[in-house]
Structures are given as structure tokens and as C-alpha cells.
Length: 150
Image (cartoon, rainbow, N blue to C red):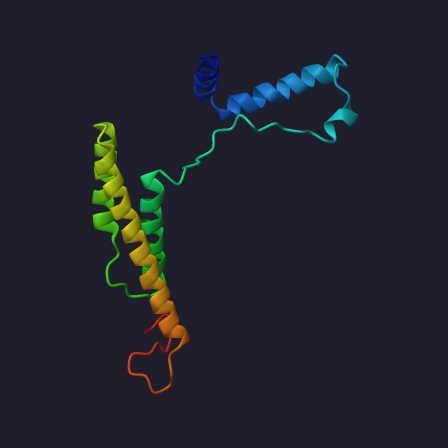
């Protein structure tokens, strides 16, 4: 509970005020000779309490985010995909969340497998297109002449 109160207080005060508070604290410490200037040459900051945006491999959001990013990267680089799987992937992701909320774990697992299948298909499709570029011959009909203007 204490951590939440400190976070709430820091959010209300704002980052500019926190910087001023830190500066004033250091100034008072220097004036009262509790802190020496040579101690300020090297400062160690402990960031172990910082929250991290870690998602575990069992989380469906990670798979859906991979589908989004890979589809966008393929689109940005001019790789034409059979299907981007963004729409059906989002539907599967939402169903996973609903099933887990309703404690329907077997159904959630089936939807999770669907999402992983969509991701696998997308990866194979991008790799297939990349290999097509790598293996193209001068006499091929469907060849890529320029990366930005196929």
C-alpha cells in the first residue's frame, strides 16, 4: 500500500517539482556539510523498483503484437502477403481474454493455438517471399527489380 501512496504523491507533484526537490535536498546537504563535492563525482542510481513492460510467452498479447509488427514491417518494405492476419488475430486474442475471464481454459487454449498458428503462417509467408527475392533469376517473370518499386 505504501508504494501506491508514494506513486500517487509523485504523480500529483509532477516531475519538475521532484527535480527541484532533489536539487534543494542536495543543496541543503552540501551547505550543512553532510555531503562533500567529491561524493557527487560518481552517483549510483538503483532502478530495481522501476516497473517493466514484461510480457510472458503465455500471454496472448505478445503473439498478437508480433502479428501486428510483422505485418506492418512487411507492408512498409513492399512485401505483398497472402493475408496479414491482423483482423482474425485480434478476434482470436479477444476470445482468449473472454474465455480466460469466464474460466473456460480449454477454449482459451484452443484460441491461443489459433493465434500461434496465425503467427506461424505469417512468419512462413514472409520467409517465403524473402527467399523468392534471394533466389530470383534474370529470366523470371515475377521478379523484384527495385525494392521500393516492384
